Length: 461
Image (cartoon, rainbow, N blue to C red; front, top):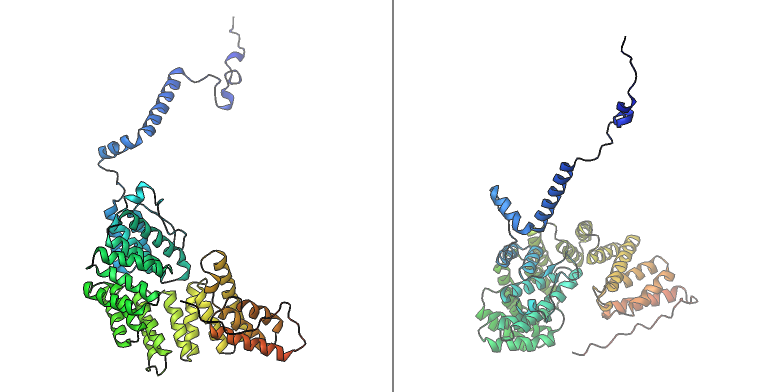
């Protein structure tokens, strides 16, 4: 009898689930146990990572690299300082004292610990000293680094509290206070420093700088002279003595001290700006010697040899050329500065002044308007005070509007600048603008009352 053929549906692909590529059977027990064991081992590895990882890496001929020590960070910072890169120096000194570095222009730039904490009491004096110093040096470059002077004072106070009997701690705190416009508080700290160590040259240097800032010029000169005698290789000693000599009318000696300061570390830029400022002040004096503006330009060129993107150097070159009537060169340098950093307000101000001097009032107004906006934003963010704003961005903008016949736009600018300006030039030229608008349209009533532009008394020191 022939075998019957029929379909076994209990063994079909539809029955066992393989029609769509898989069976309905569950996971085998041995697989489940193996999977759980693997997961458990992985969790154990993660839990013991700090212990296991170095052993595993050593087994393969590799050892995990530990974090740099405080000494390593300090060495990196000092190398950066010698090369003139103060931002990298700040980062590494900050890490060396276990601070928390922020980004450039951040507030804080190097966060300090709570002054009452154990970390503050154990901070390394030598490294903390250098951190304060480079924070102050960097603060000379740009008004946007306002937080650097605050951080320098915070770290200086920590050092003075942790090492009250250290001349270095007291001296560097005095330096930070002076550069945070607290010279009268800095002087007692400086006096403490030289009483603790009468042979500490930088103690006399920082006391001299505080005395100059507080207009105690005879004391500043005496302390500065002592500083260079005790610390002939100190940039701060020569800057301090040079400043005291300049303030007391000894220009030849001041120039020599500034030049000596340049040689201590030729890659630091701020001594070049200091010497340039000396030349510009000499240029504005009665019976000034010739070539002072050009000498200042030469200093800015030296800075640009070190850093061809130094915005401050281009801006100051612009100002120097403007002051000797070379508007084309001035505008070229201001445009370069603005191109490198559109938020550098000083460059906008000088660019506006050059346009104004060239009688290109529309472009001048544009530059001054940007400057005005940036200044107001800086005040809002606490970077500067209202008294520190550039008044030119208001009164020259107002005068440009007046010259174009737009007194309705000029009046509010004149009104605002008289609320904060203290310079005689700003007040005098604003008064002329107000008078000019009044003569053009005597029947015009401004939207807000215009105060009388009268000279203000000199500040009491």
